[in-house]
Image 1 (cartoon, rainbow, N blue to C red):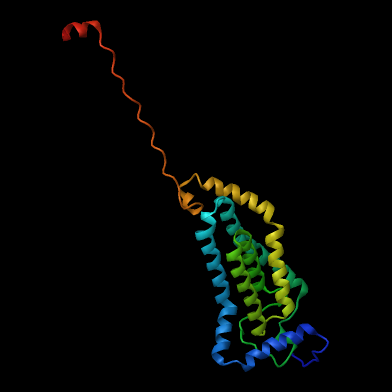
Image 2: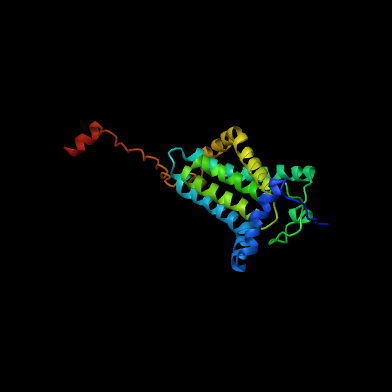
Length: 231
């Protein structure tokens, strides 16, 4: 049962209430927009940024196989980070804020399970850091989207600020710490793909296969008999 507790000694709860109070003052349309962005919209935008970076930046890079491997790693790292977060949530077993505190305006009611670490923040951070490793410009946009995702989770009243920070740390750490071996394998795989029909996934300008040269036909030298006939 939720209880009312003094927040003055808990900055995590104080910051949660300050951000969540914005939802109480905002128009209903704003709340619905933030709800959509926090649940699905910002994650979808992150995927679009990663896809754009692959198609327009990584494939046109001077080292296209390594750059494409970096984008692929961003998605793989996000999946690994989400898997790592599952036992962490079970171990910490932190309830959602609304289970412990009254007075919160919870805008996303479909969230169940434990709060720490935030799966949305974990996924967003893993993808954003992976994209940043390939392109500073696209990565900066992705990081801003990840930060917005974390803010939305607190605004919706479903995560504590430390849940979001923990998710950011887990996602970024997974992408960075496992990058050396992962990128080595993925770059080798991407390099091999450049010699297959799937080469355009790695590089936009695939040279056409060189036709086999047709051997020149040589005419035999005329024999003395042929010369006599010609005369």
